[in-house]
Length: 492
Length: 95
Image 1 (cartoon, chains in turn cyan, green):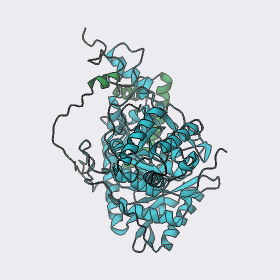
Image 2 (cartoon, chains in turn yellow, purple):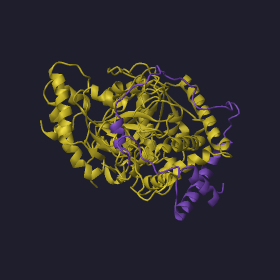
Image 3 (cartoon, chains in turn cyan, orange):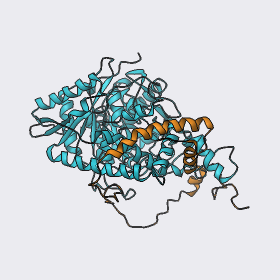
Image 4 (tube, helix red, strand yellow):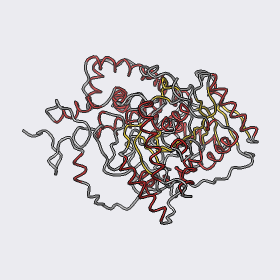
């Protein structure tokens, strides 16, 4: 089989051919290694690509087990790449920061351990916003990720490298992380599928922390079936993360129902007012019509508290970031300033030279909202607002199984267009951050293109641990539409 | 809300950062804009929420509190900017 035939396959189809011995694990790895190496200069997706020998060693070990008749998993033999904030033994985990450029983890994240045990082959680490702080994958020290649909445009963020690499068929599946939309929004911008799991469904052990009460690792792939297969493998209890409360891995029914009769879908009609691009609005509402035609019960409601979600999110995320990032001291690991003489200078100068502008801004914002005199007005108020948002979602899920919404108000914009306007960037998260504040699961699915031929994404949100229901609806949508099968045509 | 030079100096102290005068002016301006935008939170009616709210109701998946020797000290020290192979080295703190 030709390399480009191999890279055009979905992960589950590829694993099926590997199982049937029609493709070797090494052959699959070789095809994606060259796709990654070829795509890297065009899209700036990979921060590191593993050495061939290292990949072949992994591939041969998996092949040996398969040849011996071991049932590893439905994705055994499939190559994967990971966002560069997920730890893997022996591979650098830079978080796209000068601070961690020379950091090599000494342990695997739990999600990575599980993927390796399931027979997936890690081929590299993917570009992102520095420390996952951003919505465009432009803030990292390795430069902006380029959108495969138009390389002058951003890939979204912060898991932009993961989404763009999947869109460009440089990798069949990837892991990203989602703190305020960082899986869903780049999936929307790049025309691929992704899942932000319920908080507590996937262990955060080995995920370099940004905002611990919001962060979740999740899958990105070309279709929802591949995402579900990956989520099954990485979810479930882990003694090393006390917040991972899901006892057993999420299991998914592969059958697709005849119709969606009985499914109650709510559409927040105030999401379709100011600030949303008209092409996004019509594509998402058109998707809603398709759910209605499939006999789902679709109606509209007003989403309360929307004016508070982005401010509450940024107060809480910045507060947690300022605390989490205090570990970077220039002593135990990470960048150390050459000019520092005293201990305090080591701390201050290493952090000042090692962190980029957006990271410093969020650390200082976090320090501010937690400081004496402002704590009550900002941090405490944001936490109370978070409790209200959570309660409102609980009420909504008494009436609806799924909330259908856009992922982002716009499609991918030009690289450099918004980077100097933090508030504009933060406003781009308006439809995604409430999901993290409430700890809910959501899927992001391609649902159309705008006038510039850039992909548009649809979001399905469910109550905690209702991934099965979301995925069934998503599978149905991908059965009756072909947006997820479209591929970028190259440079423009 | 006005973010003055004094506030920025205080925040950089809290954050263990040292910014240039130009960086301080830029951050003052951007924090001022961001905090002005966040000030809308004061309008949220949170009377029904406990004043002591501290995040999600705590539900932890606990494990037995046992030590585990990963045997990785040497590898961990390899990541240190300065070490003697056995300890992290820091500048002298006691004269």
